[in-house]
Image (cartoon, rainbow, N blue to C red; front, side, top):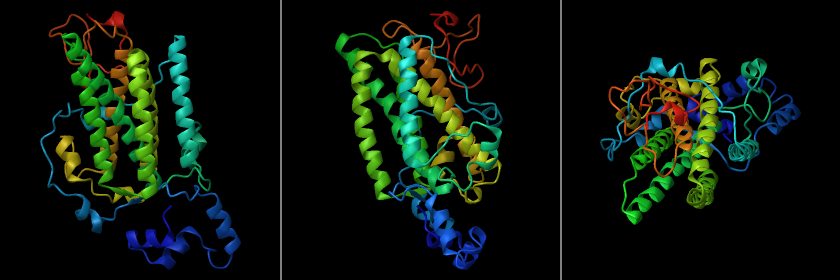
Length: 346
């Protein structure tokens, strides 16, 4: 949790001024101050400090920048405004179990980190002000850093297993590996970008370390048993990612996160997303990341609908001059709930 002293120092605001802004009775009525602090998230060390502009040069270096192994397809900022949360209703028992698993994982993480997804217009307007669910810049960075550290696992694990499968059986993979590696690379770019903006606490780093170890192994064995539902799991995971980033954009639009308005996005971001430049806003960055997650949602729901052994990956092996709309790597034919097998030319 950010202390008043840390906030005052990083924002260059005198401590006394900061106290007056957030609590006009901080000195006169200490019992009310204690009550206000009681509704904040548990002080378990799961926090991230937003880096001040004066410190950005220490983290925003270009010493190890390389050309992206998987260039970003390019969406256009105007296109990203049309992205919204969309849910694919489970239609099989396996889908229902997978969706329930995602809901349980999300509920557990939300409870621990003090996050609540707004559902009503009133909740979106007030954003749980005065409760433990009220979000600030530090909590948002903690959340997205942890989520991206997990989101980068499935693509790499699935690509690794399919790579070994191709070697072992001496057969082509029909381009699934390329898209899965691209997905893992993209999620890692999300994480590296956010890491340039915040400094996670040691406890946050520990949770990331443990979370990756547990999730990576579980996903590895699950993919060996049933890759179809692993892709469905990731599809539902990306649905929640789109929901989370939509919530973040709503709060940015409402002016509830003023310190993000002053953030200088790191060079690694406009080196990867060609739509960005050094003058782009944090809002622009989050809009593109949300669009990436929406594309992963589409890809994994589509892959879950295919024959895991024999069907080609339609996002990599595209049919030129097709007689009907087909998947591609941009947003021109975007289908949030994925492409059904009957809609594809196989």
